[in-house]
Amino acid sequence: MSRVQTPILTRLRLNSLAGRLIAAAAVWTVLALVGGGLILSSAFRTSVQGDFDSEIGDDLDALVAAAGHDASGAIHLQERYLSASFQRAYSGDYWQVTPVGNGKSLISHSLLDQTLRLGAFAPAKDGVAAGYGDGPDSQHLRILSRRIEFPITATAKPDDSRAYMLYVAADTAELDQRIAAFNGTLIWSFVVLGLGLIAAVFLQVRVGLQPLRRVTQALHRIRAGSARRLEGHFPSEIEPLASELNSLIEHSAEVVGRARSYVSNLAHFLKTPLTVLASEAEAQPGPLADAVNRQVVAMRRQVDHYLTRARAAGALAVLGSRTPVASVLDDLVRTLRRIHQDRAVAIELSCPPGLAFKGERQDLEEMAGNLIDNACKWAHGRVRVSAAPGGASLLIAVEDDGPGLTPEERAQVGERGERLDESVPGSGLGLAIVRDIAKLYGGSLDLGASELGGLGVRLTLPAIA
Image (cartoon, rainbow, N blue to C red):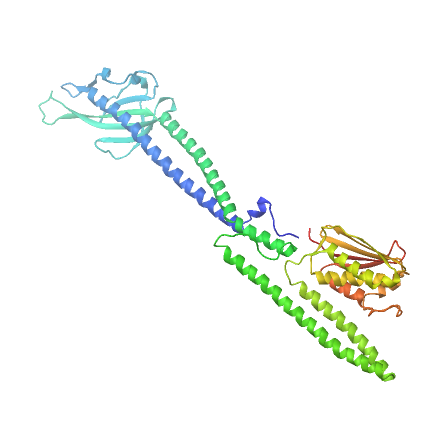
C-alpha cells in the first residue's frame, strides 16, 4: 500500500515536520499578536486619556480664571467664561468648588441639586490632582482638582486666607467608547492578520517541503517498479540526500547481481560433478550404479530447487523491479511451441499489453515457463494461457486438455516435488519451485480443474498499476 498520504489533517500531524513548523509558527504568531495588541491598546488608551485630561484641564483653567473673591475671601464665579455644557442638566460636564474646612460647595447647573462623589486621587502634579468619581445618573467621571487660596483683606491678620478645592469632571463614557472601538478594530485586524500569517506560513511550509514530498513520491515509484532511481532536480539542501539514495540503490543492485552470479557459478560447479557421476554410473550398470543414479537425480532436484529459491529471494532485494507480462509470455509460448511441435500442441495466449509484474523478468520466466511446459507435457493437444489484472495483483492461468488430477492428487503435487507419473520427463519440482517463488513475492499458486478438461493452474503475483 502506498505510503504517500495526501489528506490535510494527516499532513498537519504534530509528529510530522510540516505540522511542527506550522504549529510553532502559529503559537509564536498568536503570542506576538497578543503582546503587540496589548501594547498598542495600552498606548492608545494612554494617548486618548492624555487628550481627555487635557480637555478637562482647559475647563479647570477656565474655572480658575472665572473665580474671584471679595474682602472676606469669599469666592464668586463669573460663569460666562465657562463652557455652555456646564449649564445643561446631567450633561456629563460638571464643576464643583468646595471650601477647605467648613462651608457649602458651589456646583454647576449641570449637577442640579447633587454633588460629586469623589474617589481616590493620584498625587498632584503641577498643582493638579487627577482621579475618578461618580456623578448623577450613575455616571463614571474623570475628575481634575486644584487647590486655590484667596487672601482675606477684611481683617488685620497678616497672611490670612481662605482655601478652596476646585473640581472639574467629565463623563468617561465617550472615552470608553473610543477605546472600545479602537480595541474592536484592533482585535479584528489582528485576527485577520494572524490568519493571513498562518496561511502564509502554511503555504511557505508546503512549498519549502515540496522537494521532500517529491523524494517520497520518487521512492514510492521505485518500490512500485516504475522507476530505477530518484529522478528530477532537487534543491541544494536535498540534492546530497537524493545522490546518496541513488548510490545506495545502485549498490544494492550491484550486490544482488554479484550474489546471483555466485549462485549461477555454484549451480554450474555442482551440476558438472553430478553429470560426471551419472555418466560413470550409466557406464557400469549394477545395483551400485542404480543407487548412484537415484541419488544424483535427487541431488539435481534439490540443487535446482534451492538455487532457484536463493535466486528469487535475492531478486526481492532489488528496488524498482518491473517486468512486462505480455512480452515474457509471448517469448515463452513461441519457444515452447517449437519444443513441443512434434506433439502438435496448440498454445493459445491472451494477455493485455499494459500488464506488469512487480519483480524480476527471469523469475516470471521461471514460474510461467514451468507452468506452460508442464501443461504442454500433459496436454492432448491444446493449452490455454491467459493473464489478467486483479487490483494490486495479476492472475496468470494455464489450462490444458490433458487427463487432469483428482483433488487428492492436487494436494500431493507441488508441495515436495512428488511425481505421480514417471512416464513424462522432468524432475517433478516444477510446481514446487513455482510455489516457492510465488510465496517469496507474496503470491500464491492454486490447482484446480480446467474448462478444457485437464488441469487448471492459477498463479497470483503482485502487479504494478
